[in-house]
Amino acid sequence: MTSRRILAALIVTAAIAASACTGGGQTQNGGIPWGHSIDEALASARQTGKPVMIDFMATWCPPCHAMEDSTFSDSTVIAKAASFVTVRIDVDKQQDVAVAYGSNARKYDGIGIPNILFLDREGTEVRHIVGYYGPVQLAAVMDSVLTGE
Image (cartoon, rainbow, N blue to C red):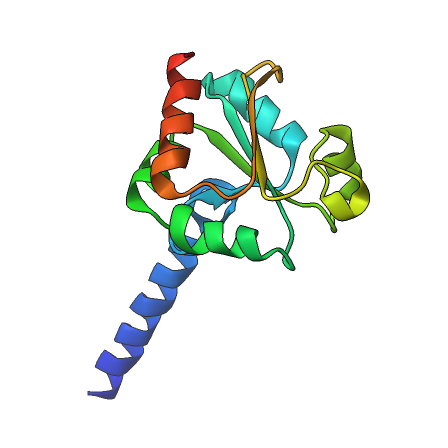
């Protein structure tokens, strides 16, 4: 009986470790694998042909938390995100990146957060949205980026 418990614990531990490593990025709610480097994302985009979706956020931002809880955890959004190279930039921890891409928080004289920047595989801006987007709204934006409309 003890060996079964040990085996079960090992299986659970292995499953948790495997899910944490999926896609090389961090996932939230078992969903979107977020990278943290725009340079790495652009390199991946050039290799895969996928566009880049960059989520600029902050841990103190209530609308950012709302998007995490309702939008980025939505199964449709998660499925569509697989067609993008996804990056999450914390505007406090990576302020230089946020400034360089014109996506820093209002408290840093920027446009505000949350905001999502979509780039093509060459790094050219395709679309930039600001503020809270629900799952249906974001899925529609993602579709428009993917279809080029």
